[in-house]
Length: 141
Image (tube, rainbow, N blue to C red; front, side, top):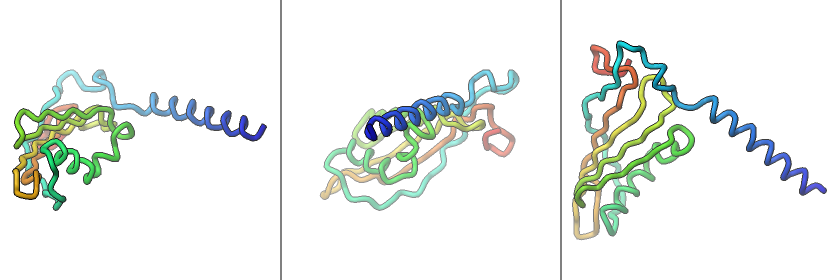
């Protein structure tokens, strides 16, 4: 009998959390004023963490992602991750569906290098995709 109570409580918690997720999702496109269009900021260099070399370029990209605060936000703070690696030494990542009224997505460009020990990330750039456009300062409105 106690086990059924735990299952029921867990099920009720999941129902409550599901309702919260729907209500607290990312701002809708309709929330963007008509005179403002989504726009990207300029790409800016980011610090490159010191990570162990990886056996493949894809593993190096995933290792970098796992080492960042962005990995913990998947399915919590944003809803999507797209990784495009057009060639082994370059990867492009896009995080979408952010629960932010100013920023709708972040884009990253990673440069990788093959060393004797394996693949390493050598440069990172990031830009924000602003939901309501850019201000004069170059930051999201």
